Amino acid sequence: MDACVVVFPGSNCDRDVKVALEAVAGRPVRMVWHGETSVPAACDLIVLPGGFAYGDYLRCGAMAAHSPVMRDVVARAKRGTPVLGICNGFQVLTETELLPGVLMRNASLKFVCRDVHLRVERPDTLFTSQYRKGEVIRIPIAHGDGNYFADEATLDRLEDRGQVALRYCPLPGEAGGGNPNGSARAIAGIFNETKNVLGLMPHPENAVDPLQGSTDGRALFDGLVQALA
Image 1 (cartoon, one colour):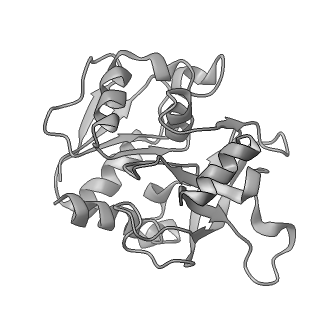
Image 2: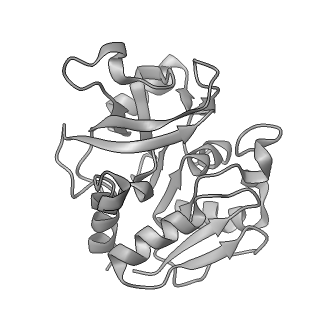
């Protein structure tokens, strides 16, 4: 699998994703500066990493969505190339309209940085094939604008078409419902209709090594390597 990570001014999890992918795939991962006009032709997977692209000025992901390289990313996604957007990358994907909805300020109006529990809703995609339906995993979040919102008709379409990938959930006995940011229907990640684009707010790249406190994110990368090898 040949993967590339797009780097924007303000990205801060780009190397985290690179390290995670290289540890799982055993192959070098290319870093592509946002000012490039295209990603490498042989790229099997494009990752938009977490961080604060352009300092989150104007609106999270809004400026990054118009970076030169994004024209090619959008075109490649529409032709079927897998694209993974993590945290700020998820915000960029909504701004390009590759994914519906928007990410708003957390309901608490505070930055949230902690582990959360997620329920896997779709295990039959190239991103989630190593998980079981209904499996609860633990992965960290770190965001101030992770409150997923869409109108009710869009939310219903996401549910009906199986586009909800992950949902925040509490463990038995946990108070507060497990939703850390107020996201509609506790949505933590969604697919596009063809399931080759995934955006999620939690950071699976920071749950790959036992030293990180959880390895529940590794299965996402294992599944990608297996599917794209």
